[in-house]
Image 1 (cartoon, rainbow, N blue to C red):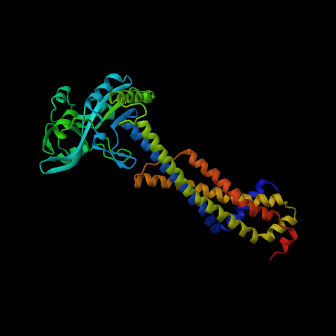
Image 2 (spheres, one colour):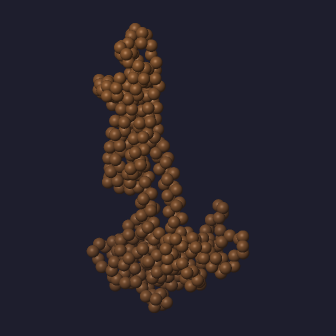
Image 3 (tube, helix red, strand yellow):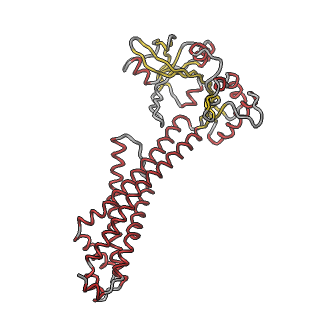
Length: 406
């Protein structure tokens, strides 16, 4: 019997039991749609993190003092005060692979203007910080070296501060607000950056001279960190080695002793986040894939029922010359058709649900071609795998016993 006739017989059998065939496809439809949607969410999250890291500066380095927690024990406050201004100066002078370096002293408090107040973070930095963090000035200017030396009470503010402290439509340039008890004059407004990959508002920021924050706001002699950017991404590891060597020498850290600082790169953060999202994507895909297994079991169950219902038909076909391979092919084609048609509907539903997730729930999604191809391959395999045994049972029926079957 030729393949065309087998397809025609299979289509006729499925059409005569439309509702049952649709219910059988349901598991495959849900499974495929879930796999595509989950992979789209995982891939979208990964792409979103990569974009955010790129916005922050893919070649950025963060040098921070030793953590205040070590093996579950809280360390002394002195261990978080290991970076000083001369460390920044040494790194800037001696590290040839850095294009920009900025000390950083941060402080949290309330920005107060008239009757408005808003919780903010103030970063004490130098002019290089804008280049390192990829901030741009929308209006106004950056503070000068003279203002840094004089610990001037001037600052640049983000868009969130403009809206929450001064109000929409108000030009804050030249206005003065209080941070704690100190007055600060706004000399610049930063362009909007939005939230980063961890949901932090990058526009809720005040940038001031590091000397001002260090001396006037916090009254400390140490730095909370040092930010830097490499000349290009290819020299990141070399730059980290140079920084570690410089600081170990300056801090007189003996060979084998732990550093009292740590250096983090954006690439390291990207690798960590990508690894996490990859694990989560696989986990979500496995959970969604269970629906495919359930759908496959449904196919096997229905094919068994179909073989039982059509036992006499099988016997008659064998009696007029149909071979076992023809019967096997017929039922396999039925199983694969159920699976593939269910897969097509599932792909459409998965793509549609991904767009709904992106536009309604505002989650980042990215539909990849490999997830669609994988779904079709899995659908076909599921149809063959779960349809084989019932089809084999039908092919092995004895024609005389099958015709006598009631």
